[in-house]
Image 1 (spheres, one colour):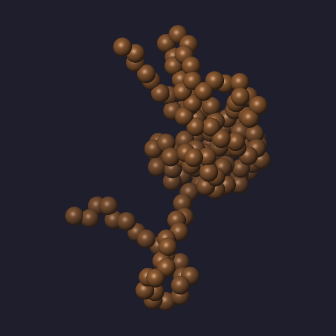
Image 2 (cartoon, one colour):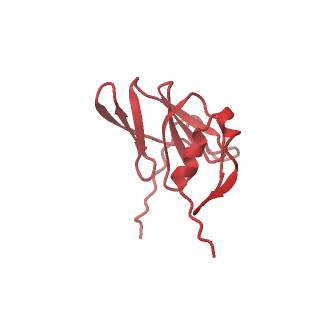
Image 3 (cartoon, helix red, strand yellow):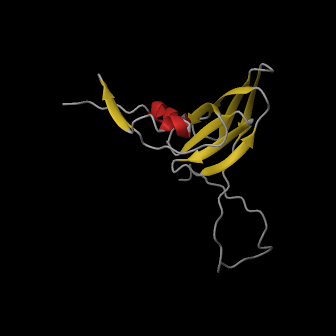
Length: 145
């Protein structure tokens, strides 16, 4: 009986491979007690410096050398880009992805950034009261009994 372990961080680290290097890495293989299968791979913009993935595995945050944190979904679609200061060398996120943490090697500083994901809701044919383009905030009360 074989026991298989999947190391999510290791799988995500494969995403850093540039297109040239990615061709030399086999899609699957085994070495001693380690077996691997490539789960996802896509081209990214810029050269990666650091990365972190959300706990639910749905998002990958990549810090690149263009002073940006790019957020990708599991299909490799860019969800958005957050500009960061020159010198940012490491990133991390809060458990639910609601905060992005940055450390800056050049200035010896730490920064926490709130991250909000905007979702468009199709309201075609819905009754509207007030301006159609008015901002809307939806609050979820999860402790309602």
